[in-house]
Length: 253
Image 1: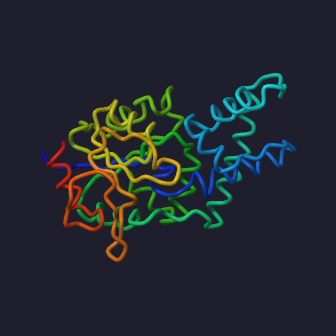
Image 2 (image 1 turned 90 degrees about the horizontal axis):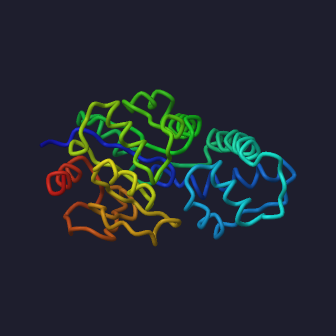
């Protein structure tokens, strides 16, 4: 049973988009709309328990701004989120959100090895396009056989819908793949689709529970910047490459 495909989450996994992009964009959108709201890094950490930007805005209003009155909260959240997405794309276009260590290298190595790649995320297609195009070049969008974003399934993570959809589109079984995630919601989603998952934590998710992970790392590592194993079997590898992934797959999938 050979490893055939890699399926990647986006926010927090490929780049620190939450801290460097989405949080900044939310606050800029609030200011532009004349809202006296400022989400601190600490508060945003809590709000990330709710997946999907529109749902996060609604949760914030309901739980933190009970006196805020709006005719239709769903319409309001959608309009704020649309502006926030425009601002986020602008930040990405300005080159302010780099990829995490090892991501670009692994993409290139996986392609050279003939591994199929896909994306499974709850963020919008515009956000995915902007991040990939501005960190790897627009042609890199074609590196991914399937891009499953938050608009193609009814239920966002932690529901497994997006991973089930991606597997169906690729005509693959879960045992043929490894998923890459950074959060509890993400691994719950991937596990629902029976995928084995490699976790790279970030500042927002380092305290999450990842009982189902095949390995937990601080990042994918580079030849001159080794990863740290937080949970998993000791290895001679110091960065995630195709051989390392094939070994993980053989052990766990």
